[in-house]
Amino acid sequence: QVQLVESGGGLVQPGGSLRLSCVASGSIFSIYAMAWYRQAPGKQRELVAGITSGDSGASTNYEDSVKGRFTISRDNAKNAVYLQMNSLKPEDTAVYYCAAVGSDKHFLAWGQGTQVTVSS
Image 1 (cartoon, rainbow, N blue to C red):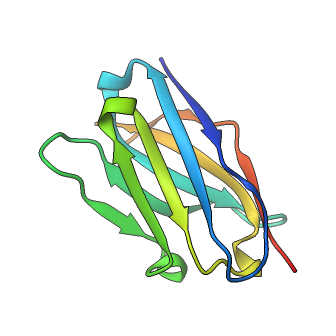
Image 2: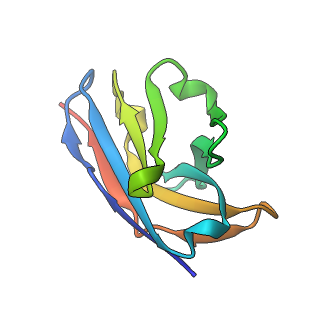
């Protein structure tokens, strides 16, 4: 099994930055990719960014509204994935979840979620 622990959420003013972290433990060898999702009140959970976990190089993808503002990265030595969020907007307010995905593209685990609030 895979366990994920997130950190780094909080309250930030519009235009500010936050960095989310997610550390994986357990059966990390089974992880094909990591991703960040978010869920705002009254809305469905949506993919924010994803990154593959191979040693030969990572590929990334982003939801259109965060391209150019958010950056996903990983540190294989620490079994960690990060989401650097810049130029934050009120519409980025949501609970952010880290997810681990297996090679069969099924979800292996979800983090507990961390609240990000963008407000003046």
